[in-house]
Length: 276
Image (cartoon, rainbow, N blue to C red; front, side, top):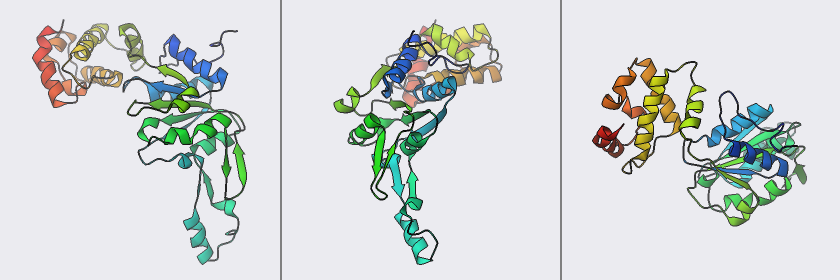
């Protein structure tokens, strides 16, 4: 049986390459986290939603920030609320379990059905964050010291971890993951992706917009390369504005939808005569 059979496939709203589908299905089969990298706008976060939709599973998302600690994903013991309740004579104050709130990993581990757990932008946290999760992601369990209880995953979740490569991740963490880098879509795949977002799009408009889009991405002077989502926004603006495709390369209407930095705008305008 192929590893992709009965596994993750592209959805109506998310077009995945064969390599990406295989990476998801290998990670699932080997019961390892899938670490996804790629430049902004390549659909890293959307992948987890697509996997959940394709597999008919619930998605649990843990958005990582610079202040996030590994403990936040496990559980929180609300000592303040317990102290407050004790002062006012609330019932159940002696039951510590009443003041334990599970984090996103805890939610995923205690689910009665398999879920997709997205740990989004793991590289935003400090350098020790990934190492602090090694045991939990490996053994799929953690210990609550206050109640002397071990929380073990009822059904191992599908774990998808995204990174924008802002920081290098520890080798020990990388060894435990299946890795996939999402390449920026070529024209053929991009056309498929764009068409999933519109009931109808004029082919001449689409082809001319993609011509300009890839020309902009190819300019060395452009520092922030436009992403897939910005191309989709631009095509949407062009359609809503009723802009004829014949004017795209000459006038570059609504350029601020695609290019977001002053210096990049200047570079595009300076080189627009080169657009073919």
